[in-house]
Length: 416
Ligand SMILES: N[C@@H](CCC(=O)N[C@@H](CS)C(=O)NCC(=O)O)C(=O)O
Image (cartoon, rainbow, N blue to C red):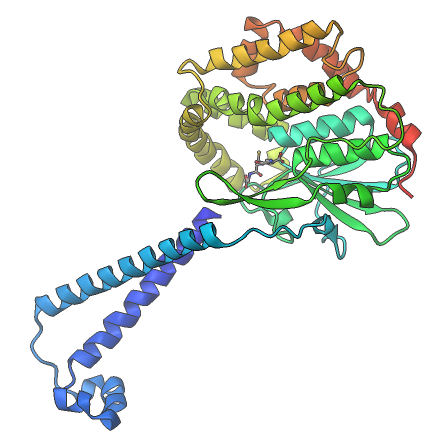
């Protein structure tokens, strides 16, 4: 996106300069009397060769360049100030009603990288997950879908060309497209936590259709502390329980929500600086991503190599910035272990196998999901050696891979 913007910007500037280096000299070469004569102005403009050129001097060119620089600077500053002023003074009117999740028609079909089918899924949904195989947010959504036994197709998005997502203005993954068997309804659910909350609410409420549920998650616009407009999704960590007793105390509901948010706001940010800690580890991680994501299958060779080489260098550098931004220690591994231990202590305090008790809840699925994104990296091997995560992690793997939550989806039945 930024490359595209930069090239547009550069093209704009070069056109601007071309325009002026042509027009300004043509005016300059005109005799004063001709310039004053309205009838002669056009003639003068379009017949540069007909007018005798005065001897060239470097100073007017220098002054002209200075003038252009000054003009461009003034315009840029003006636009910046205008934008800042507009941001601060434009009232934010949130009219979102959840209608933004509905598409007029199903998007063009792209190659399905993998299909997961579970005969116990009676929802009638045809779900397509658009993802990067090793993006932690995508791994979180896959973990949720697998645990509850949803059937779904996977479209692997090309992270260089984004060819598969050109039809939508949403610039991130994961998102899912849901078509409903026997109806024209097509929905696009965006953001990993919103997707999980909406589908969990669907499982929990027999009397509500997904079409109504998504309206409880409107996308809202707000201003952050720096005066920048941002968007977020309301209630994205909230689950609707309908009339069915949730079988959980209020405290458990709040704790689950709090730790799901911790996964997105804290835990996930310990991953990148660890995975891309050194140039070597970064390169090794990208090679693993290529293997796990079957990039040979989905990308052209040059695209795959470009992503591996440029990506590993870029992420190594970005990893350093992320370390600062998210307040990780210089020894990034120790931050990774510390946060993991905080989580394991919470699990232990609850006394069960999982944070959710005998069965995992959405916080368990969140932590496990994002960790699977780095399972093949050195950082994860170090985590296994230096913390006691192994037991919880392998218990989670068993329940997710065996779709142990499928009974809940099966009991919920069809959306219709
Ligand atoms: N809050 C979003 C974050 C998603 C996100 O940041 N995805 C990254 C990939 S891990 C992305 O799509 N970045 C844009 C890009 O790579 O083009 C979610 O939970 O789904």
